[in-house]
Amino acid sequence: MEQKNCEMINKLDGTNTKWWKKSVIYQIYPRSFADSNSDGIGDLQGIISKLDYLENLGIDAIWLSPVCKSPQDDNGYDISDYQDIDPMFGSLEDMEQLIQEAAKHHIRIIMDLVLNHSSDEHRWFQEAKKSRENPYHDYYVWRDGEEGILPNDMKAAFGGSAWEWVPEVGQYYFHQFSVKQPDLNWENPKLRQEIYDMINWWTEKGVGGFRLDVIDQIAKEPDKHITANGPRLHEFLRELSRETFQKADLVTVGEAWGATTELAKLYSNPDNSELSMVFQFEHICLDQIAGKEKWDLAPLPFLKLKEVFARWQTELYGKGWNSLFWNNHDLPRIVSRWGNDGRYRVESAKMLAILLHGMQGTPYIYQGEELGMTNVQYEIEQYRDIETLNLYKERLEKGYTQDEIMRSIHAKSRDNARTPMQWNDRENAGFTDGTPWLEVNPNYKEIHAQSQINDTDSVFHCYKKLIQLRKEYPVFTDGRFQLLLENDENIFAYTRTNEDSQLLVVCNFYDKTLAYPFQKPDESMNLLISNYKDVSETMLRPYEARMYYNNQIKSK
Ligand code: NOJ
Image (cartoon, rainbow, N blue to C red; front, side, top):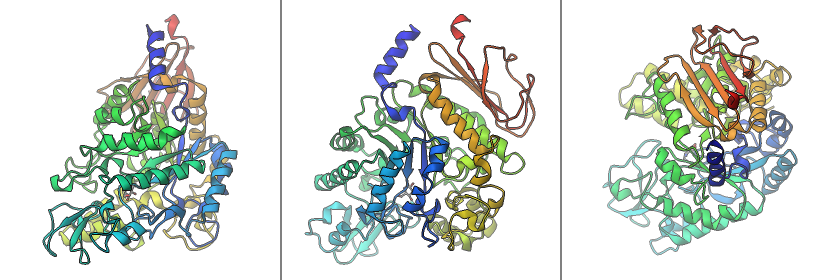
C-alpha cells in the first residue's frame, strides 16, 4: 500500500523528474551582493566573481531580483525595459555571460518577472498617457473622474491613494504600489502577448526559470476593490504558462501573499498547468497584530507557527509543491526575528535552517542567511527603502511617537535584509571599494563569509551540509510529513516518512534548556546533522536542533 501510494505520488507530482524538487535556490539581491566597479552598487560582474562561492555552498539555482532597466524607484521592481539590463548592473552581454558562467558552475539563473506593473518610464506608459486613443492606453488600468475626486478609496501599498491623475487624458491610473509603478491591464490580450514574447525571449537566452512578482494581483478589479485573487487570475496564469513556461523545463515560483492551501493546489498543480510553486506568507505574517499592518508588532504565536507549517506540508503532499523560506529582500533577517542574534546567534541560525530544510518543498536561501547575518538598527536617515521612508512619514503624521515608529522599522524594515553582503573583515565588508549605497551592518568584522567557508562549525557549513543531505536522501523529497508534540510550547518536532526510511527533526525553538522529549535514540537512528558538538540523551540545550535518519523502519 505504502509502495503504491508512493508510485502514485511520483506519477502525480513527478518527484523523479522535476529538477527543482531536489534543488536549493539562492536569492541574490544584486545591488547588495558584490560590487565589481566600485560605484557602491552590486552588479552582474560582481555576481560572476562569486560563482565559486555559490558552487561551494552547493546551490542549484540563483533567483536574481530584478536587473532590467529601471529608474529604481522601488529598487528595480519598477521596470522601464524588460529586454535590457540596467547600466547600474551591467549590460545584456554581462547577463548572457552570467547565464553561461553559472551553467559551468551547475547553477541556473531564475529571473524576476514584474508583470503586475511596469515603471511609469516604460515606453508603453509614456505612450499610454498621451491620449485615450493611443494604442498603448489600454495597457494600463484607467478610470474617468475629475481632478481631486478619486474613483474610490483604494490605497497603495507604499502609502497614499492607489489612483493618480493624468491631466493629458483626464483620467486616473491605478497603481497598487508606488505612483511610479502603474498597474498593467491583463484584460488586454495585446499586452498579454507582449509579455509572452518577452518571456520566451529570455527563455531562449537560457534562463532556468522565473519568479513572478505579486502574481496574484494581476487580475485586479478595482471597481470591486479586488486586488489579489481576482476572478480571472487562474485563467490568466494557465494561458501564461501554456504560452511560455510549458515550452521549456523551467522552474516558476509566484509571489502570492493571498495564497491559501486550496489556492496553492491550483497554482502548483502537478499537471504543470500554472506554476511550479508559490511563495505563501501565512507563517511570515504571524508576528503582527491580526488584521493590521506588518509594522504592528505582536509576539510570534509558536503553536500557530507549527500548525501553519503542518497544514501546508500535509495539504500539498502529492497535490502541489511548497516553497520553503524564512527570508527574502522584503523581510527582516530570520535570526534576529525568531532566533537570537546575541549569545545564540550561531545555534539559532542553524536551528532555523535545520527546521526548515527538513520539510518538503524547494528551499530558498536569501543572501547572507547562510552566514547568519542579522538585522540593523539604523537612524531614519540611514534607510533607503521607499516603503520604510513612506511609513515613517505617514506614521509621524498620524501621531505615532518616533520611538514607536523606529521600533517597528528596526523589526520589520526591508533594509534589514538589504544591507551589503558581508564577504570579509576589510572595509565595507569587502562588498565595495566605493561608498556602499546602503551602509554595511557594523557587525561585519565578526560575521563574514571568509571566516566561515573553512570552518566546519559555521552557519555556512550547516547550510552546505543540509543542501548535500537533501540530494543524498530521497526522503527529503518524498517523505510524508507528520507534526509531533503539537501542543509543546517550546519544541518543534516532526517526522518525514517514505516507504523505507524516516527523518526525525527535533528543534528547541527557545533559549531554555529542556528535557529531550522522546525515547533515547537507539543505534538505528543516525544523527545526520545537529548544531551542538555532542548530543545529550536527556537534554535539549538552547536552540538545539537535531535531525535523525532511520532506514530500518520496515523492521520495526
Ligand atoms: C514584491 C517585491 O518583492 C517587492 O520588493 C516590491 O516592492 C513589490 N512586489 C512591488 O513590485
